[in-house]
Length: 148
Image 1 (cartoon, rainbow, N blue to C red):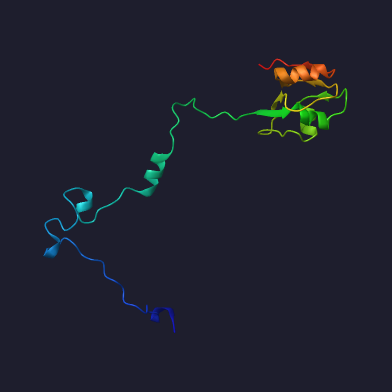
Image 2 (image 1 turned 135 degrees about the vertical axis):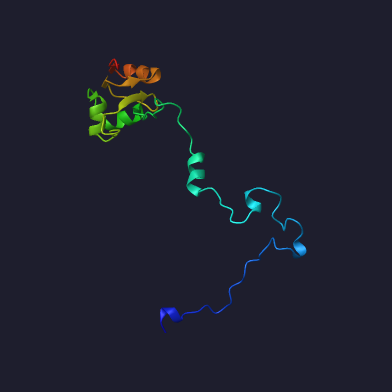
């Protein structure tokens, strides 16, 4: 048997041809007027519908900015650093607490979640008020950099 000799087992069902008189009535189930009532109707391309559904950005300045802020709690810093050690974005990356974002060193914000019992020197990081109080109470100091 070859491929041109293959035939289906069952007969193909014929689609009902409407709009040729008979018991269907005046419009033959197609409604009145418009594209769907006519022969050879065409739907709009599928891709056009997809493009229309996407949200449009207004203006050429509407570019999404990446969130380049890494958040660290002082409880995590307490576990990973020794007393009198310097905590800055580079040392946090070296200890794999944070990652680089887009190949750049991320801005770091230290929050007051957890306990701190070591005196640490924090430089070049944004620090919340509660975290600053806890760090200074433990004997460390915070030196924030001016980020322009």
